[in-house]
Image 1 (cartoon, rainbow, N blue to C red):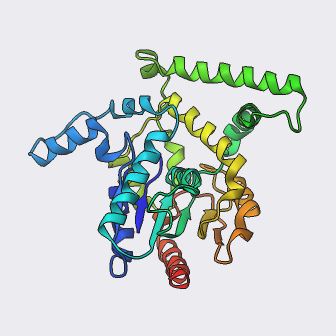
Image 2: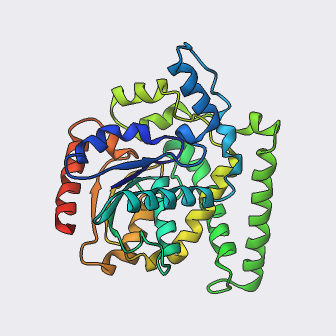
Length: 322
């Protein structure tokens, strides 16, 4: 089983999850590009603290996201990890992915579905947890102000990246392409050296209230220096583009899956999961979803006993697949 983390976190957080599956599976994890120990700043911090340094300033670690104009580098990390598993282990391979990691995994699998990659035939299924198949849906007064603008910009991206005029007039299509270009240029400018220190937003405190309902986990996230607290605007736009592109091809996803999500999730809106289920549920008899009536995004890091219930659902599904 390969574990794949989400945006701005790292695979070390998933040790408790790995320990749950360890009696029955060989497990591997990967820190995607600019995250965890693939991030040079965090790696130096890790080495310094292991050597006895009491503190290390890693506040600039988010700048390593500058290379992420799309998810290609992350997909390469994912494929490298799967190739590693193929060389080290026999038998079927499963994936457990969260949030952005699910988008990376799903798009990489789609891209290689007709290739002769040795790991394609070994894949037996994927466990999606809160997958990033939609943009954020802000709650409360923020949502009333921001959500209409975000919905408009995402629709513009979907039209511009579709490469065809279907469903829109020619002037709407070309207008969307022009607007999408301006949006991308704006994000590029805000991500330039100097400007990015001013215009890169820190994670608002209220976001923690929608990641988990568990106060202990919130405290851990506040103090965890390996979790990036900022997101470069170029990286945000890259993720939005990848979601828009994925939605155009997701109906072809035919790897068996178990999809777990919160029906009121605001970090990655639940309409993305529902659209994915509508497009793919019939592609395999073992496709299944398990929804929680909660607004929290990190379902595996919610207060007990929710994670235990999710892991039980996973165990049942994995036994059926095996």
